Amino acid sequence: METVIILVFVLGYLAITLEHNIKIDKLIPALVMMAISWALISLGIDDFTQWFDSAKHHLMENFGLLPYEDKMHLMEETLLHHLGKTAEILVFLLGAMTIVEIIDYFDGFSTIKGFIKTKSKKKILWIFGFLAFFLSAIIDNLTATIVLISILQKLINNRDVRIWYAGLIIIAANAGGAWSPIGDVTTTMLWIGKKVTSGHLFVYLFLPSLICMLVPTFIASLLPAFKGKIESEENLDEKPKSKYSAIMLYMGLGGIVSVPIFKTVTHLPPYVGMMLALGVVAIFAEIYSNTKFSMSSHDSVESDAHAHHSPVHYSLSKIELPSILFFLGILMAVAALESLGILFGFAGTLQDTMPMMGTELHHAGVSDLVVLLLGVGSAVIDNVPLVAASLGMFTEPIDNELWHFIAYSAGTGGSMLIIGSAAGVVAMGMEKIDFFWYLKKISWLALIGFLAGAVVFMFTRTIF
Image 1 (cartoon, helix red, strand yellow):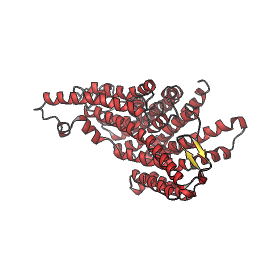
Image 2 (cartoon, rainbow, N blue to C red; image 1 turned 90 degrees about the vertical axis):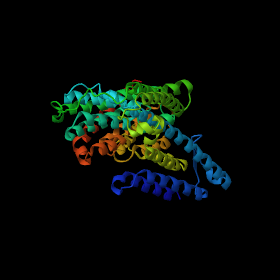
Image 3 (cartoon, rainbow, N blue to C red; image 1 turned 30 degrees about the vertical axis):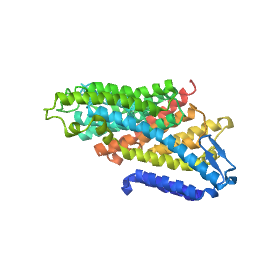
Image 4 (cartoon, rainbow, N blue to C red; image 1 turned 180 degrees about the horizontal axis):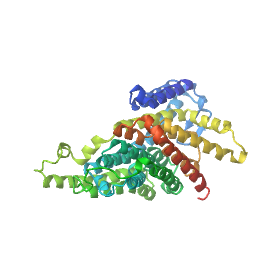
């Protein structure tokens, strides 16, 4: 039965990886393999000899000796435990996505556009590089990419010039998401899963992530594509649509940034702080929305969306529900493999079979090699299941250097291929970037950045 469950997972994983070829949204195989995996566990519960108790973090070797009712009860408890842990991540993401949509409702991101006064291609590259790096740490790398490419489309008319910027934005956004607990879904998973803390994440990963962004950006700034000035007739001083744009931008970003502080002070799960931040932002959004409508009831500029929806209702209708369902499916499917002890056993096999020189370096060396391979793997297949699997494979304590290295590798490794990260996929869709163009022009820059950051991490972890 275990073999059948693994086969279901492999086929589902393959369908997720080949999403663009088979033209089936990745959320569908994720949900199907989750449901089938747990159904097979329930139907074949008497065939399993071991069980991984996730709540107590230990492998039950005597599971096969338990009566049928006890096995079913333990399975239901485990399923509920994993659903609770998954729901923490999903509710957290729902809150963050809604706050970002509320900011966008008030055209808050146009404030960022107002900061860009230069027409030098090289200066604009550096501005967008740093914007992507820091913005992705606050609103996550996917959203930061969408926001910055949207601004780029207003600044640069020539698509051939613009896709070069988009490629470097992907690298910078993925690097920026790695050092923040709210910057990337995989880092959020590690943070909520009590594998890393926000303070240590910053200390260990800020410098490696910064190098991962700086090195490719510096090399790119020397390339012909970023020589000269941009030709654009767009007015850089264009006024935002709402007078509350800047207020909502700072309030929304401030609300998201306050979540790690709220968790540190109260010791409550992060989604509680995110719901509080959403509530506060939503209150002001409703107040400003009513003020705006009463002041401009005869103004024809207001869109139908603004006229017929409250900001919160409108923002909730805009969030990416397919992504939420995909995370539900993939995390619960990986939980099925973890519960049977399959991931735990695989990790042990991996540690034993990896060739290493010197027994004292065996554990650290194997982990480094495995994590670097995980980073390369995240460029080919989705990094969410890879990190979810690593949560079940390794038993290191909170803030162990292994978890920080996993956060770095999974977060930045995806930049090496355009399909390797959510930021890359959305940029590909927004700018119709060709897979092979990215492979030839950008991938080598991403690889250099990834390796440079990894070397810096290996050095800095010896200091802290």
